[in-house]
Length: 115
Length: 115
Image (cartoon, rainbow over all chains, first blue to last red; front, side, top):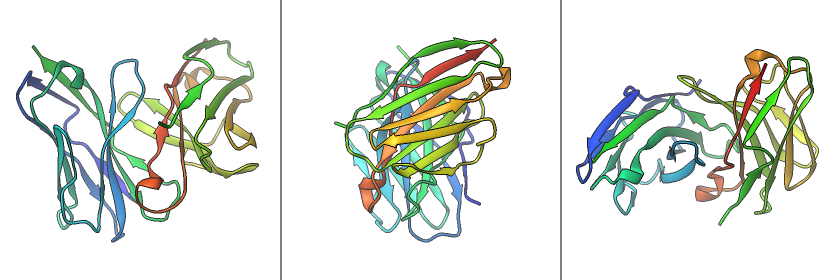
């Protein structure tokens, strides 16, 4: 069974600094997708960034980028120039290609941004 | 933008009551999902549906049932609510396919308290 591990239950960062959230996963599949979702306090979960495993290039979305290491089964999220609005619970998730549904989530990392 | 809505943000019910949680999506997505979110446990899949009147059990279906009579609407039913079903319930939708189509989009969540 696939598992997703987020080893940092909580992280904090100073406003304008950079922070990296860790995620590792375990799978025997070769083709899959990886996602980072953000859930602000009492607000809707939204997609931050996604990566297709067959693409070697790391995904980037504005201040958010990933470091995807397929051999190491590692998928970390880097947030640059952190803003107060980045404070949220961040979930890493894994989806085998063609599975249609089986999205497996990590347990989340709570990010605090200090002014 | 994809919009997924849930009928209630907060709900308080008594033990033994029958509870309906409603979810509606406006993007003509085939797939719809119900998750349960608990602190320290991340998100766990209760049920999903890949078409009208079709459903499959997720990881924790016990104590729950679902109904999908129309493509845009997916209901989660607690036949006899119990205190251990106090939780945050998240609905999501996606469309089958490849690449980014398989991204799941989430509703705002319903926080259910069973007394």
